[in-house]
Length: 378
View 1 (spheres, rainbow, N blue to C red):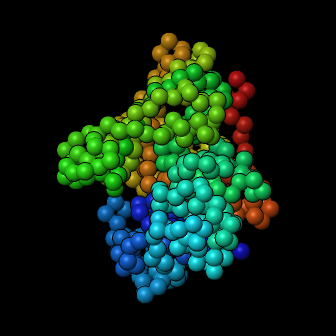
View 2: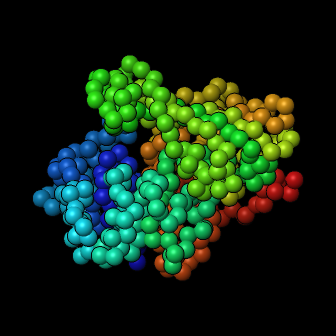
View 3: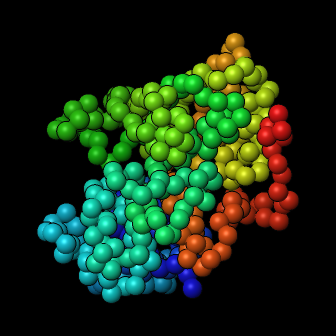
């Protein structure tokens, strides 16, 4: 039987998870039985059917009084505000009637205590956060550490962050085969929904400035997200983020100090080997088009976690590596959330958690013989 899930929070990520789920299979890759948000159901249906970034979905969208109807499948809708819950009896506690295997929290406001109480109340066996909620049991980046999931020990899981999923699969082979002493990471991120179109109040005043007129500096947790999955990098990463007036696709410009001498050719070989084998469909080495670099919009709707702009890869003095990455910060991340649901599903059925192609880009590599990266023998 398919994994049964519910989801709370139908903002950009929550709606993206729904869209990806019903785009990957006619009746849904997973059995998402219930969705929750504070918005009226007709607004949810309207936003799913008419997406300014991705256009209309490849399935029909409708609704009635209590259900979203996605590709003909009914997803029960509960209009609740979890933040108004008092003590154990939270508003979403009534979801225990749906028999959920996993409760996905995409609200960005939950605490680990709230999520554990849902498990105690029998709402779901596991909870999965779309950010690194403080106090989680494990943060999973698909392709790197998803096989570390232990269903007996891990109950409050996170699927890291969009930038974490882009950065970690690139740093993983570099740290493994060369070593990283230090990195400065600059993320160039599209606007987010908490920013202001016109100057106004914001708890972070610079984010209250008009996003149409400025590049806005702000903080980012990408370094913390990376260190949760690759603990050897803890304390070695400095990060800054700039919000730019675009709708989608994030970029990173990275300078690394490596642990030992290397060459541009060796770095290319390491990344290309992993992109062709264990991280196929997760990272991609991009050489542009007809000798010209791609623009960020060219990666719209691409489910690959990270595109490495190979023409920008430089090595100076044998120890200083420069990297540039791009990734669809919504669609690719939502596809990884579904991949983590697949990991939970496999563990529940006793199947192996091997790192293998599953959907979309990875489907083209089905049946290929496993290859040991040449860099592993260096």
